[in-house]
Image 1 (tube, one colour):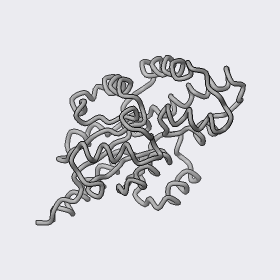
Image 2 (spheres, rainbow, N blue to C red):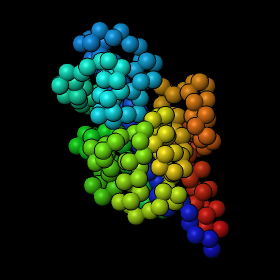
Image 3 (cartoon, one colour):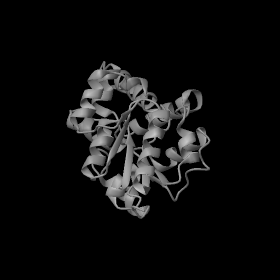
Image 4 (cartoon, one colour):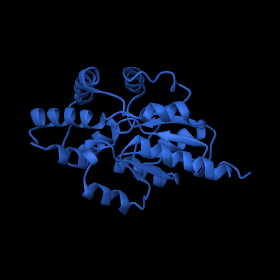
Length: 230
């Protein structure tokens, strides 16, 4: 029997486990347009800030000459919690993967730890994820698109990067995984990524495994597991 090369699935949260990335981006768009006079549309916000930690967002905006007030993250967080309570739902089919696949799984998200715990509670996934398998941007020096977070997750879960698989939706997150030398499955089920132009961006990163629903992803994961064990 061959060694099972796929030993750990590393999940992004926002846009993958829940279709929440669009909520956080809309909230930041509201604040940037209201308080900083940017007049950005959603496409522009997603282009510049999609998939990044709050710390990285601040750096990107500052590099663009947009100096944020000290309370920017606090104001964003207030809106996020309102959105979390009203709108956030788990991605259909993802719970079935958590339940049925016999493999280690963890979360590595650009969100903050406390907020991530609350997001997991909001979709009732506490039984799958705890402090032992949740890794967040505030645990590393550099957030996505740098590889630090995924490398931390692999290390803490005691697996080599080549034996992991990252499930990501954002270009920043996929870039981070590539820099960590971890294989990537792109999940583009979120409505904000339903375009041929975005798929082309993903393909340009060299990513071939692209999925639009969790049922397709589950079949792919099961096949990888069975092939490795054959």
